Amino acid sequence: MKHTYSLSAALAATFSLTLAQSAAPPTIPTCGVNNLCGKDTPCCSQYGQCGVGAYCLGGCDPRYSYDLQSCVAAPVCKSSDYKLTSLDDVQQNNVYLGDSSNTNWVSSGTPVVYNNQAVLLTMAPDTVGTLLMSTHYVWYGQISATMTTSQGAGVVTAFILMSDVHDEIDFEFVGVDLEHAQSNYYFQGITDYDNEQNLTVSNTVSNTHTYMVDWQPDALTWYIDGKAMRTKNRNETWNATTQQYHYPQSPSRVQLSLWPAGLSKNGQGTIDWSGGLVDWSSPYMQNGYYYASVSEVKVNCYNPPSGFANNNGNKAYYYDSTFGTNDTVCTGNNNTVLASFFATGDNMKEDPNASASASAKTSAATASATPQTVPGIAGGGNAGNAGSTTDTSSGSSGSGNNPGTNGDTGSGSNQGGGNTQFSQGVTQGSSSSQAAPGTKVTTGSAIALVGFFVACLML
Ligand SMILES: *[C@@H]1O[C@H](CO)[C@@H](O)[C@H](O)[C@H]1NC(C)=O
Ligand SMILES: *[C@@H]1O[C@H](CO)[C@@H](O)[C@H](O)[C@H]1NC(C)=O
Ligand SMILES: *[C@@H]1O[C@H](CO)[C@@H](O)[C@H](O)[C@H]1NC(C)=O
Ligand SMILES: *[C@@H]1O[C@H](CO)[C@@H](O)[C@H](O)[C@H]1NC(C)=O
Ligand SMILES: *[C@@H]1O[C@H](CO)[C@@H](O)[C@H](O)[C@H]1NC(C)=O
Ligand SMILES: *[C@@H]1O[C@H](CO)[C@@H](O)[C@H](O)[C@H]1NC(C)=O
Image 1 (cartoon, rainbow, N blue to C red):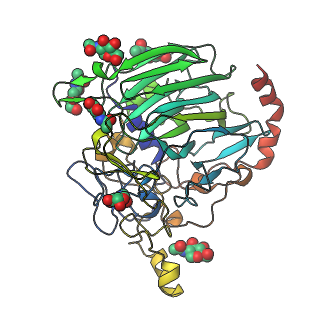
Image 2: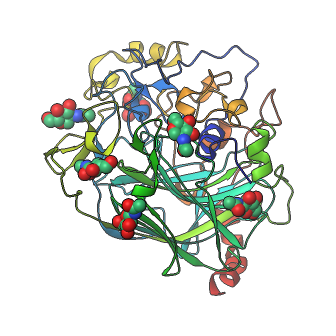
Image 3: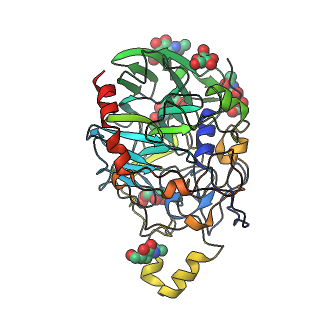
C-alpha cells in the first residue's frame, strides 16, 4: 500500500498537539520553506514553530531558523551501552538546557521506571504519549534498542533516528500488527512512497527483541536480534529531480516513542495506517495507560566519513549551510549549553534572572508576547495537516495553545513518573474545547504493574 503522507510528519504533528483554550491563544510564529523564524524567536522547532530556549536545542532545524547560529550546536556521538533501568539519566525537556555531560536522555511525556529493569513509555488518555530522545547525536554508527512494543488500534511504538533537517531512519510498530516491524527512511522529510518495508518478527508485545540500525555513509542495514533483515545502499537512492541521494546523511538523535497516531485530528492516512482510532478504555491499557518498554540502548559511533573536511573540533556538530546535506556538516568545539530557557544559539548567555529585575521577569513571563520555550508542550495544533504535509517544518499555522504552561521551565520533575506537566499541555484530538488535565500517572501505579511486567520481561 502506498502512503500519501510522511509518518515522521504525523508523529511530529501529534507531539505538537495542544489544548485549544477558550481564551484566544497567542499566535506562535511558524517556520518552513521560504518562511524563516525572526530575530526574537529565532529557532525553528521540529514541529515547525519558532521559539527560544529548548526550541534551539535538539530538533532545531537550521534550514528554517533565523541564521546558522540560532540552533545550538549538537553534542557529538558518544559510544555507550545505556541501561534504561532508572530515570537517573533522563531529564524532562523543560529542564534540559543542553548539558549532555550531565544527562544522556531527554523526555517529554511520562516515562515510568518499571521495577529497575526497564523504562516504560506511557500513554494515558488525553496525552500524546511519551518521547525519549538522546542528548548526543549520531553521525553514522550502530544503534540498537532492546524493547517491547505497545498494542491496540491507533497506537504506534517507534525507535528511530531523526536529524534536525528531518533525515530519518525508522523502526515503527503499529499496534494492530504485532508480527512486523516497519522499516523506513527519509531524506529531509521528503515522502517517498516506496521506502517502507515490513520486516517479519515474532510478537513484538510479548517478546523482547533487539532492533538495530547499522548506518554507514554508503549503506543502511536494519537488524532484528542480530539478523540482517534489509539493506539499502546509498547508490540506490539517487533522485534525478533533485540530483541528490535521498539517503539519511545528517547527525541524528536516537528517539524512542509511544504516540497516538489514531487521533481524529490526525490525517485519515495516518489513522488508517495505524489501524484506526485509539480506544482509551482498551484492555491493552494497564493502570490507565498504554505502554512500551525499553531496557537498553547501545550506540557504537563510527568515525566521520572518509573525505570529511569540516573538522574544526570534536565536541559538537553544526551546519555551514542550510542545504543540510552531508557535506555541510561540521564538527567544532562549540558550547552546547544555554544559560536559560530564554537564551538562543545567537545569544547563549541570555538569562533574565541574571540581568533583569525580578519584577520585569515576572511580567515578561505572563505577557502574551512571551516566546515559546519548550516545543511539544505548548506548540500549535497543526495536527490537522498531518495527512497532507510532507515536512512538518512547512506545516500549517498553529491554532491551539495553552498559555498556562508556557515558559514554565522550573516545575517539571520526572521522578517516579509523577509529572503531569506534559499531559496538561496536550489533549486528545477528539476534544476540541476545554481540556481536562491528563490522567495522573503515579509512582504507585507503576509499582502495581510489577507482576504484569515480570511476566512480559521473562518471556
Ligand atoms: C506493511 O504492513 C502493513 C500492515 O501491518 C500494511 O498496511 C502495509 O501495506 C505493509 N507495507 C508494505 C510495504 O507491504
Ligand atoms: C560553531 O563553531 C564554529 C567555529 O568556531 C563557528 O564557525 C560556528 O558558527 C559555530 N556554530 C554554532 C551553531 O554555534
Ligand atoms: C551500490 O553499492 C553497493 C555497495 O557499495 C555495490 O555493491 C553495488 O554494486 C552498487 N550498485 C550500483 C548500481 O552502483
Ligand atoms: C524526488 O524528489 C522530489 C522532490 O523532493 C520528490 O517529489 C519525488 O517524489 C522524488 N522522486 C522519487 C522517485 O523519489
Ligand atoms: C557526501 O555524500 C557524497 C555522495 O552524495 C559523497 O560522495 C561524499 O564523500 C560525502 N561526503 C562526506 C563528507 O561524507
Ligand atoms: C529564575 O529563577 C527561578 C528560581 O531559580 C526559576 O524558578 C525561574 O524559572 C527562573 N526564570 C528564568 C526565566 O530562568
